[in-house]
Image (tube, rainbow, N blue to C red; front, side, top):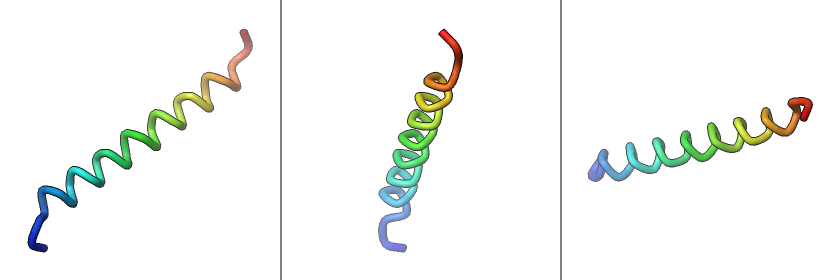
Length: 32
């Protein structure tokens, strides 16, 4: 790996995006 930092940053970014999306979906399933 020539750029482990870039790979780690990309992984963290993707994880944050998927977590945020899952949180939004969960909020939509809650009753008002």
